[in-house]
Amino acid sequence: MKQRHLGRTGLRVSELCLGTMIFGMGDEAGAHRIFDAFTEAGGTFIDTADMYGHGDSEEVLGSWLKGRDRDQLVIATKVFGQMTPEPNNGGLSRKHIVSAVEASLRRLGTDYIDLYQTHVWDATTPIEETLATLDTLVRSGKVRYLGASNLAPSQLQRSLDLARQHGWEPYTALQPLYNLLHREVEWELGPVSEAGGVGIIPWSPLQGGWLTGKYRRGMTAAPADSRSANSGDWQERDTDHTWRVVDALTEVAEEAERTPSQVALRWLLGRPAVTAPIVGARTVEQLTENLGATGWELTPDQTAKLDAASARPLPYPYDVLHRFRDREPRDD
Image (cartoon, rainbow, N blue to C red; front, top):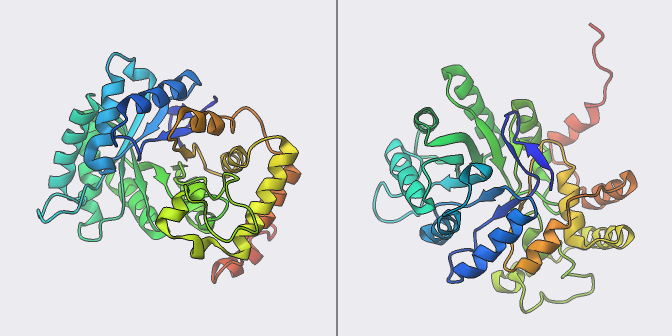
């Protein structure tokens, strides 16, 4: 597996990141087998969060880390916490961040976190308070790099501007929803990230199984064992746009002699500013299939086919800006 720089930093991470949202639900040995398979394939980048399983995911990862060469791995976690009746048990205040990082370090069994990410924007806390607190964590050595997840473009840009203005450590990673069925990142978050040196690590790159080949045009309901069947999002996804993407994905997968999952991940790996899609796996077999997205390339024609099938009409003002983006550059 190739290693890529995270945004405009010197930190190198594997081109796929292992997500651990479902870990900590009782099968610790199974999770350890997945960690082993990932690292044996060259994976170095693992992502978790303090709210996954109320901290259980971090504990499972921490138990696996014991006895391993910690410095050869890039461990990412997130802060926001569970919103409970206790007034300071969540959010991005200085009080909560300082207590949360200590709790994450304890559960992970490590004395530093490589990438510490805010899980969502906190509208109740001044962003200056959040960024200044995060900066102290980097200066103290408890955290190496900072990232964010689930931000609007204006929120990301404001965060980058404030960090630059005050000399604080900036965000160097962004974790947004991004896949063939959700390309809204390309409207503004992607360009802001690219200009700011922020590496994109997309979550849900396979859209909850919709881009794995499990769904085909003509189906009238989600498979009984699918995430969609349990979440009830069939009506939202059962659209001509979805089936157009699935058709193109299936066609390209057959042509490339790859699985739809591998093609969907490979497409993401070729997008501007993308560092590493976050892949989840319930079994080693699922992980092995996802790892097959590395070591090869889509042809330009295959990429164009996927681009065309997944494109949607742009809303204002992006439609106007898109029409004027290819004007000849100034010659001065």
